[in-house]
Length: 139
Image (cartoon, rainbow, N blue to C red):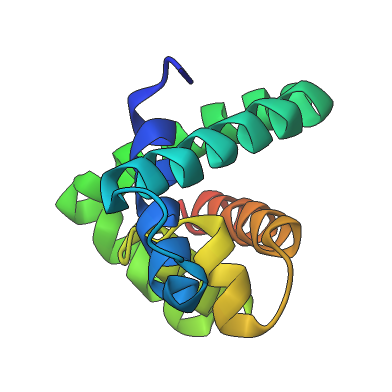
């Protein structure tokens, strides 16, 4: 439905997260698989709507995200990122670590902090910019 593997994986994670947190609401009127597929479909539709509204911002963020995440795979760059992360303020530090190293979706990061998914996206974006700026300063 979303034609993007990483987004589909994130929706899958969110589906199981929502299913686990809303298990009491499952009435048993359908099979569990049908219920999970319904959750996944609704999350995919929500994501498509969200992307339609913030498409331009997401394109910029994903391009920059790919750059910083690709750099993290390089051991030398990973060390520099960790050194910068060590000095980075909260919540930027933890949000970046949860997203990149913990591979958590933004909805779960927002839930951990008691904030919205959008807050997690913005905080991650700002953290990534701060890290890139500090790495460029050190080079």
